[in-house]
Image 1: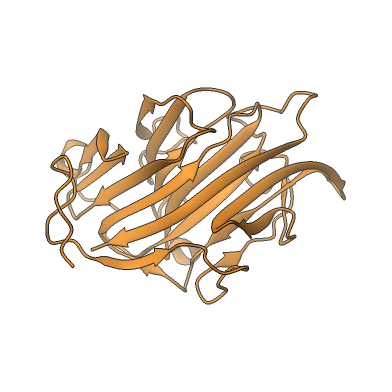
Image 2: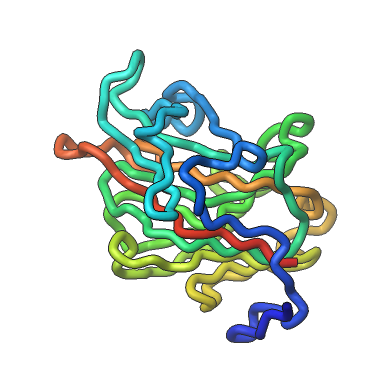
Length: 245
């Protein structure tokens, strides 16, 4: 089935190659890996990532990643992180994720891509594409890349942002379109940021490899800071995911 062009972004010969509607009562483990990580593993984050059903579950055909304030070994917070590494990856195309994003002090939900070469090259050499990141109670959505030359450790990551109200009460479609020369970020089919290879890169463009999807909700860390004393829980709700090529 041909997809129609939307605001000049979606190419008219794209076809869906994978979609996830979360119609089953449990995650499809043929596609999804559940990560288990200790607090402080990256970015000075406070949460422990677990496989508990309280942190990752499906409700009414929605994936829920719920961060909870609860004592667990070395931390007072638990949450969830999923990836599709070695189960589903892709190179080039368009990805869309329909989601509600929590607006809670200390919460850091994200939808992003990492190259399958991370085990050999390490980060940030492998390349990272952040499709959607949000922190705290702001109305700001961020789209960013990290590479060997440009990354947050050097404080020179390349990215864009846009404002969007009702993030936590309405579903929005967060997307990325990607080819050998360009990365385009959009929300609800409206472009808000674009990177052209020839503007920044000569020989170090790392985005010509297979990438896998990550969806998570961190708590705390260098960027959002700690939750306040009223924090109890925070829900990141994903309705569906579509990948086109």
